[in-house]
Length: 179
Image (cartoon, rainbow, N blue to C red; front, top):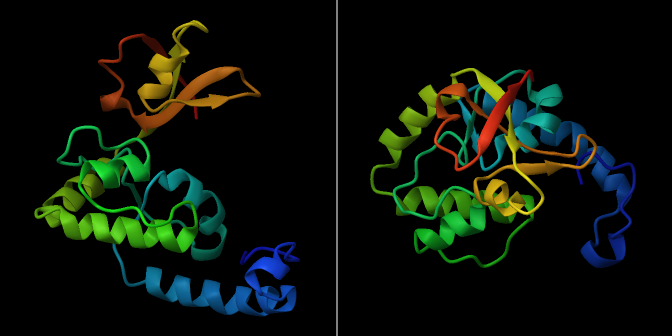
């Protein structure tokens, strides 16, 4: 909502469009100030958050808790909800920015060695990333989806942005495409 010129959901959330435009500058200023005091930012599927934050906060190191962080429980790492549930963290609400931030914070609290894991993730986040495309048939598309690949309708391909060193061991062929 910070980037909105209007608020079509004002009758639901009670936030006047004018307040959004007034809050926009101060919210980004607060975030920019907070970011100046940290080594890295963490987000699940960080490329999404980075895409709209970078122009406001500058080029920062992003740790993707999906791609860079190695979670201790099996079944974790695809969606934030699946990761939380795999670690016994209750999901009260999801898919709203604040709820996802709070869920990630509770996940960090649930992992005893999170400091070490985040440091390893920070180092992993520094590795060069490649766009990896899955070579799967229509019948085998679920293999790509289960491996964390996303469908790009415009290019008609399953893809995933990841460190080149992690681009092995899939149950299908892949190819690297320049980012």
